[in-house]
Length: 340
Image (cartoon, rainbow, N blue to C red):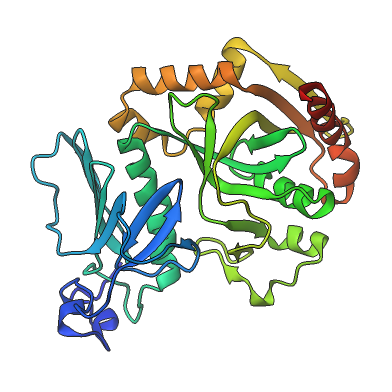
């Protein structure tokens, strides 16, 4: 594959500072909130909730020149170097990134591009809000969970499962059809040691396939396409999101029922509950690197003991969603009555 090594496609129209990887010095930082963190960023994030300027930040995102390799790294693999509290990696055609001590993200866009290509801001923001912040959250020794979550009558319930398990589709259906507010889609964060365990929401952004949009009657023409999939869309700054932390009451792992099977719900305990929590960890490889396997599994086991965990098997057809979700909705209302 050939690349434009002098990055001319990207550099056209940039100031000299920007061509060296730095923003214009006249640009003031922007302030945002996500995952319970205050961000100061030289890059704009329309996906995030803005904060008043000038406040103290927990995390700084800056444009800076980066060497090709991380100095004094403890380990490396193609495109990635890491040590105990920092890492550096490159996303082809988008940027080189360094994440340090759970507090700072450095971004260098001086990377080879495909001929005639210019890295869109949407791809860059997606990369920062996923891979880079995923590494940073693990550097803080927190538990980022890959889930979709809603505020139900029984508190916050999260839904997890393998890629393509329908987490976002299920959450969107419950939001639109039951009126339950969304809390997080894709990733939410637990801070170990808090009692009860609070879930800190990620960006207020809902990702849906075109089939789910059609079933829910949502017009995709004004939505943002997913950088990695042309048939998936993002609902940015969606009005139905809660943006504050709330206790996580339950975690439900989603599985596909066999042909002709009815939807079933099964409570899980002990090792099975632990496996569900461990399998939901976002970027597990970062957790092993920065948390360490023992501490990571201790935190996961503690969370599994303090929340309800279920396995939910359901038919795959969107046409049967109302019927297949009936046992889940009934369980949540029953839990609300019991909690009251």
